[in-house]
Structures are given as structure tokens and as C-alpha cells.
Image (tube, rainbow, N blue to C red; front, side):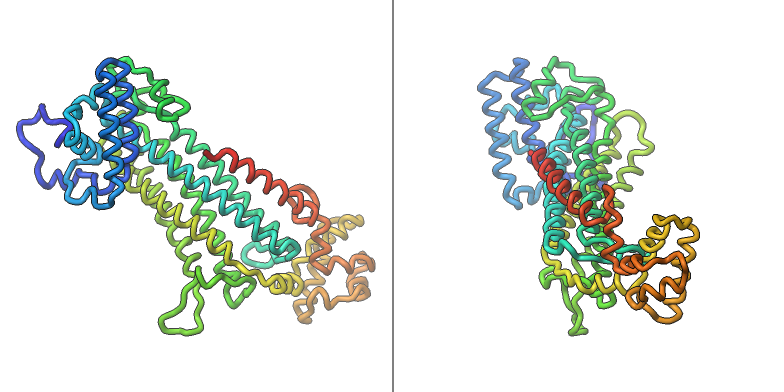
Amino acid sequence: MKLWGGRFEGGSSEVFEQFSGSLHFDKALVFADIEGSQAFARALAKQGILNAQECDELVRAFAEIAHEAKDPAYFDGANDEDVHTFVIRKLGEKTSLAAKIHTGRSRNEQVSLDTRLYLRTCARTLLRQTADLMSGLLELGRKYPDAVIPGYTHMRRAQAVLWRHYLLAYFEMFARDFERMEQALARINVMPLGSGALAGSGFPFDRDEIAADLRFPAVTRNSMDVSGDRDFALDFLYACSMIVLHLSRLAEDWILYSSEEFNWMTLGDGVTSGSSLMPQKKNPDSLELIRGKSGRVFGDLTALFVTMKGLPMTYNRDMQEDKEPLFDAFRQTSGALSMALAVVDSVVLDAAKPAAAAEESWVIATDLAEELARRGVPFHRAHQIVGRVVLESVKAGKKPSDWTAEELMNCAPEFVPEMHRFLNPAEGMKSRELPGGTGPRAVAQAFAEAEARLAAMRSRLV
């Protein structure tokens, strides 16, 4: 069954049918298509094109299709052009009114509506999953409130930080991801029906009423824009890409931190795997897959971005290529978030290991130099003094804790006995109590604020 054809004397070639058909992937939109069509039937009744009985008959028939479509085998053997023609064909098997449902509606606006309805659900799912992951990170922070780890730059130990402070860094990344997805959802959640093919509908539908029926807070403003617009889809793909980017960075950290070389943490058996040859192996496959699947989502964004870049106004069939990237990006992002939460829940931190790594390295060098500066030593001079202490330590194989107060004062007259306490990483952190710093009080405050912010985010989920 075609929704077009009167202009043509012959049918489509088999190769064109196979090349252009999209039912094998856009069948994922079936429930969105039905929901939108039910609302459109009610809009047609308001216009007098359908009477109340006809409207009810169509709405019931669509509901039956929705129920039947829950069976995975429902689409077996179907060779319809796309999900829209499939639904109309199924509708025609149930009621003689099927031919009326397309009155005043273009497939262009129908596709836009279906995609928005589908993505609206996807975005809300990802928002919930992101909030769940953020909650998991906070719970992991509660388990080890006083743990100290080295912070890194250039993958070299740089300064000591609290484990909670480290986790809050990822909390901030995912908080921004939550905000980005909310912004994408706001652009998705705009009702396009009434736009026609590109010039607007020839029937005076009450677009605000249709929007209210479908729980859209607003209607689109320009019919040509609707026909050619996939910005909302790109916004969704970008938001997904940023989520998996941050998941990939977290995965990379924890692949390292759970390795024998670091040995800070243990991952649960449920999120790791072994080797078919080497009996000792416990591989972080879950994290490696998160890291790997991020590339697929970046590819989904790139694919649609490049597809859209040269399209003239308004609709072009190229835009059919938006569906598979969208479906894939949602599946991969949702799966990665679920996997990441399972990993977070499984982590056991051996707090003594990162603490020892901090204590045996010179992560306290900046703390010592800043204490000199606070006592009046020009910072460049303080930097040189401490750098010389580090150099001598490297040559002698000494750790910070190996230095006595007297040895420090013998190294440079600017040192005083009280500065010896800054050779303990936990002491230097106490000087970093400004908002956003790793000082214990600052982190405790940030942690409490993060809990409150997360609660506010959850309150916005519907």
C-alpha cells in the first residue's frame, strides 16, 4: 500500500523498493505513530471531517494495533514502505475509515511528530539514568568519606585530593549532561502537526489543542522549518555524545585504577570477565565496552550532522537517514549508563593504596611552596626552594615523610619548624577550603549541595 501514486503510471522498481524502504528500522516508531494518529483523529473530529462515532472507531482501531504491535512477530513478513504505511494498512484491515485519517496531514509533519514523541521518551529515560548514576557516585563517596588519593595532570601525580572531591568532579560532568539533555528535551517537546508538507495545513486545526492532547507545551512556529528541521535530533545526539564522552573518561580512569599497577580498587565479578587462556585474569570488559561504544555514539552524531549540512529547504529524503543514528545512540547511551551504574555499585576502594601513593610522592610540593609564600617568600623563590628539595629527594630516594624539620631548615633558611606538617598530604588539603576546593569542609559542603541539587533534578523528572 502506498500513500501516493496517482501521478505515476508504473510502480517502483524492486531495487528502489529495497533501497528506499525503512520499515525494518523505523518500526521502532510504531507506538509514537499510533499515539499521534489518535490525536489527529480527534483533531479531525473537531473539524467535522469525522463524526464522534467515526473518531471513536478509529481511536479504538489504533489501540488494537498498539496492543498487537507488542508482539515482536507482528512485523514479520511485512513489506510496507515504512511504519506509517504499515500502520495505515493495519488500520484498513480493521475499519473502512482508514482512508480518512490522512486528511490534512503530510507524512513530513507526521515523521517529525513521531520522532519527537519517540525522542521525548528516550530523553526522559536517559535523564532518569543519568540521575541514578549521579546518585551512585554520591553513595560511593559516602562509603569512603576521608579517603585521600593523588590527583593527576599529564598522568603524573600532581596534588592530593579527597576521594569525594574526585567523584564530585564526575558528578559535575553528569550534572551538565543532565542539563544538556533537559535542553534537548525542551527543543524536542514542540508539536509540529498543522505544518503540512511545508506550507501549513489547509484545514484550520487548533494546534494548541492538539499540543495539549499530546502533552506538548508548545507548537512549532514555522511550517517550512518543521519540514526541514532535524536540529532537535542533533541536539539529542550531541547530548548523548557528551554523556558517553564522560562515561568513557570515567571508564579509562577506573581501568587504570583497578589494574595491578595502581591496585586502588576492585571491580565486582559481575562486571568483569576472565581469559580463555590465562587463568589469573580479571578483565574490566564492562569499562572497556563503555569506552568503545562511545565511538559509535560519536559516529551517530557525525552521520546526521554531515547528512544535514548541505540540504536545501525543506524536506529531502536524505532526512530518512536520521532514524538509525537516533535509535542506535539511544540504545548505546542507555546501555552504557546502566553498565556504569552497575560498575559503580560494585567498586571496592582500598583506601590505603591511593593514600600511600600520595604520601610517597611529592604531591605536597605545591602545599609547601604556598606555605612559604603565605609567610612572605616570593612565590618564584618558594617554587625554586621546594623544587630543590624534590630534586635532592629524587637523588637520595627519599619520600616527603623521610625529611625532618631540621633537614628542611638546613636546605633553605626560609623554612621554619611548623612547615614540617605540610609534608603530610592531609595537612595541605586543609588550606584549600575555598568553594570548589578539596579542603575537607569545602568538600563536605559541596557534597551536601550535590545531594540537594540531585534531589531538585529528580523533582523535574516526569
